[in-house]
Length: 362
Image (cartoon, rainbow, N blue to C red; front, side, top):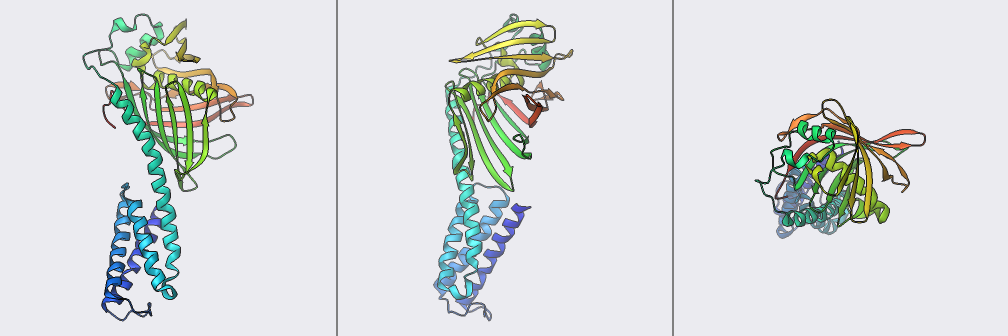
């Protein structure tokens, strides 16, 4: 709703500039502006109206160029308003509104550009061999429920996985706070474990972007208001270990073919569960995987992850609704839970929208 209200304000504000154009060229009886306007200035009033119109259309089409055009339009408009201040001063309110929203959009774009640069760099490092297939021989040393899981997911006799791109949306919350909706794009690379996760959360009608980056065995998490001001900026040893759990969780749930990784040490439990220890550099974490009789992985539990308060709690990610997607079977809906001393707390709900393996470009 706020999106369309802003577009309406920008469009109407732009249309009002036609009065300055009409005044400058003597079209009609323009009494709203008492001061004379030259034809040169009238041309600028026309140009500003066109710029606001273009910015409105591009905004509604979600084009990245809209805020840059909107900034030019608002600045030009304000200069014109100053020349006829007595009659047009209230247009300053609309210009300030447009500038604030446009600057926030530009900030978010530059923040996202860091993520895109990291993805591009990692994509440039990989070499994908489409003839190097994952076969039965590759999975013989895995625990039996893991073997069954890989067969169920239909990942055998397909190229070994070097990376995965995942798109999903859902809802997240902190304890004691309301849910907020989000969309996310994530790239994982497996030769050198890397997770690049960019999220756009919607809070109070405002898009708040966040970037979780795990590469070279170190992790960081930044959430920025308008892409400019840090709301969360966390990194360090604890964060790196916690995100190593997430990286392994991604391997299990989003890239089953990656479970042949030599950094994983498996310990058999029974026909429906197994324990795994994943080591990446100085980060060593353990998780237990739970399967059903069909071979589906239905839950992942680890005690090696830390919540936002940097305290260690049991972490689990139950999933369900397996579907066929891009020639494999994968979960469609999942949750993320903290097991606090006072009970389980669901802090994330995830709906998988698309998944691609061995991508070569952004």
